[in-house]
Structure formats: structure tokens, C-alpha cells
Amino acid sequence: PNVHIAFGVDGRLCVLALRDIDACEEICDNYMSEVGESPALRESSRLQLIERWRFECRCARCEREGPLPQREPTVVIGQLDASSVCVGVNSWDGMVMPA
Figure (cartoon, rainbow, N blue to C red):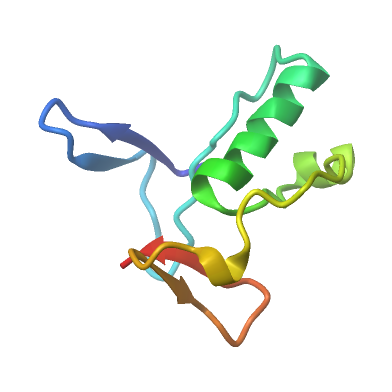
């Protein structure tokens, strides 16, 4: 990761650079702890990424751990609330963002 994301006392989202970031370099945050997690806790964290942030992590570590267990979908794309918009709709890499 090259940033740390935190919320300020005023509730604003703060993105803090951990090092100098080159122009056009992707900004990356670590959503999960690097060490000391049990496999069950890592799986739970990965599921929370899907449910809360609406994406599946494909970092090298998560790819090594393999796919998550199949579950019933919790959100059907056609039923997303009106406050969300889809970015990158011509790509499988699209994501849902607040409108």
C-alpha cells in the first residue's frame, strides 16, 4: 500500500500518503492486516470487502488463498439503490460508487 485511509474527527475521509506517489501511479490501500490473522478471520475480511465495498480483492495474497466459498448473492445488480451508479460499465472491472 502507498496510502492509509482514515476518517477525521469531522467525519471527512482522509487519504494519507505513506510515501511519495508518482504521477499516474495507482493509489493502493491495505484493507486487511498483513500478518497474524487466522484463515477464518481473513475469509471474513474478504467477505466484508464484497459486502461493504462491493469488490472482491484480487491481490497476490488473496489469489493464492483461492476463491471464497460460494454464497447466495446478497445484492442483485438490478436492485441496487438509486444512490449508486456503475463506473466502468463496459468492463468486468467496473465498480459501484455512490451517486
